[in-house]
Image 1 (cartoon, rainbow, N blue to C red):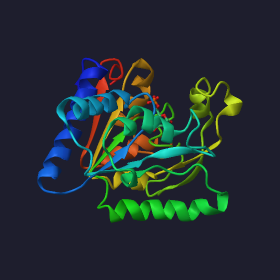
Image 2: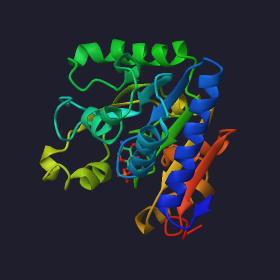
Image 3: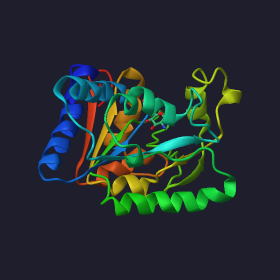
Image 4: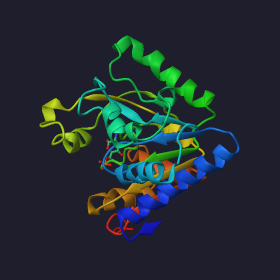
Length: 244
Ligand code: GLP
């Protein structure tokens, strides 16, 4: 869907999430959300916070799993995705702490493997992801699944692409400060979601959106794997759709 602007698109996505939360609440059931960081989903989170504050939307039945985290990374660092999620969403809604899951950037290297397996197991035990929200990196990454990530990859430690690190350099006040690794859900983990919403705004994303939507499915552009998903929607503003 191509929207006039990112505000309208984000409102649509936030509404869909809110609707599912309300519907499940009536049934006394949980909703499992896969969440993303970066600048792209922030307006969706703003709307969800507004729905909570102004309309009393409750998140008590919501379970979340974030896509990724830099490694190593302390949760209280200004660069951590834990802090990002708190500031943009979790600190402003009534979600239960125990229902929040974010890959742990503080682990010892030898603990990472077990942690990743447990993360996968927890997603499955929760009933799988009902909606996975995604942004897209200039490399075509989803989560931190960089070019070369395979279709069946699961949650694991990855090495970040140089382009991704360059894009993050200004946030980190220099390329040398950007972590070289991250823990991310795999392409397979993402594709197992019942519904996927990929969002992209601005002209800078237009070329990768064209490749993701119209390009050949290939490991060198991991987002192309989404083409095979039965219930994946791409939401863009006019600029991000300008090369389609
Ligand atoms: C990071 C995140 C991705 C996100 C991407 C795009 O690499 N790990 O999940 O999609 O950035 O960022 P932005 O939304 O700021 O363009």
